Image (tube, rainbow, N blue to C red; front, top):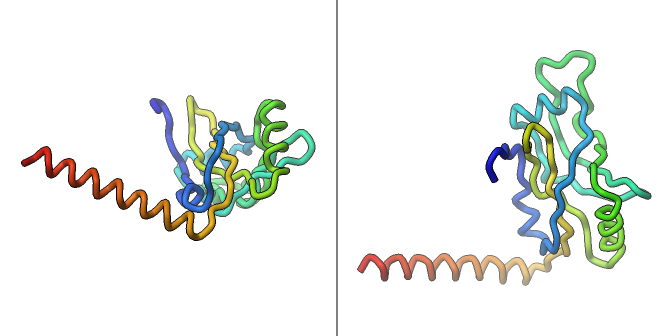
Length: 153
């Protein structure tokens, strides 16, 4: 998308989960967190989202301390509030109460100067599902290669 600066992606999320639905959420951040994110430093691989009452919280995401920050620096793994509409939070709450569903962060990015987090409702994949997905990707790659060779000939 134009005007979007991606800071971090969770590549293992789509490997470990079937993502059913995605949402875009704003983040409540401190000043030094925004500056550290603008430097392109964050890790969302271990992160997860949970809903408490009427609020959604992002846990276990590592945003390192800002190098030029002073005593006002933030804690790297603090919990951060997500900004979502009440209807979206209700949907997330209903879905996560079902067995096997969880909310995973997919990517962290800036849009028009605002930090956004793409989250997805995911169902955990079994080992055979992961193998089947890899096999499907490999088959698609081979088919594309065969078609490109056919076009060249």
